[in-house]
Image (cartoon, rainbow, N blue to C red; front, side):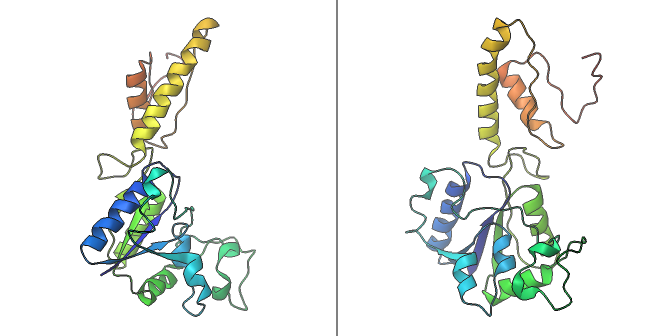
Amino acid sequence: MKIGVLTGGGDVPGLNPCIKALVYRAIDEGHEVIGFRRGWWGPLNYNPDDSETLNLCTIALDKQNTRTIDRSGGTFLHTSRTNPSRVPPAEVPEHLRSKNFDPNAEKPLDLTKHVLKNLESLGVDVLVPIGGDDTLGYGSRLFSENFPIVAIPKTMDNDVNGTDYCIGFSTAVTRSVQFIHQLRTSTGSHERIAIIELFGRYSGQTALISGYLAGADRTVIPEVPFDAKHL
């Protein structure tokens, strides 16, 4: 079996260890692993008729070239926020542009058929996207097209539906707590009140857990309505 893996969206410290664990287990099970560069940009920009795009968009993964990647954070496959179902005309790969193509058009294009054709051309049997809402959202789109997907949730917001814990959440909470504690001295010295805003999109997980661990006086989250004046 040939397994494809990619990382999309924001970077977090657990991505490289995740890639390494996947590669080591897959190879021990007798499978082949191919990594796509820059998230969904890789399978989108690969051109079966241009051999140079193979190295530009993909990399064959083995135990040798992933042996030390877990020693650093982020992702050595690199990342992007490319979504093949919503590609701005100006970002459509050159080889897909027709004579009637208008790079100044406003409506994004759905290039899913091209991505599926590329995955078939590369002989990928199953794809493992590692990412958050947008990255896995497109993975779900491919799954609806009957392409096998194994999703690994990665987001500091911890907001991927159906999961308990996402890669990146622990680091986000740890650093948020450290940041809040560091602000205490300046806030107290100047007899002020510190109002701290954390990432989280529509989920209050990061704010709630960080506020609890840092001993914040009040924590407001999107899931619970609040009165700003009363607060």
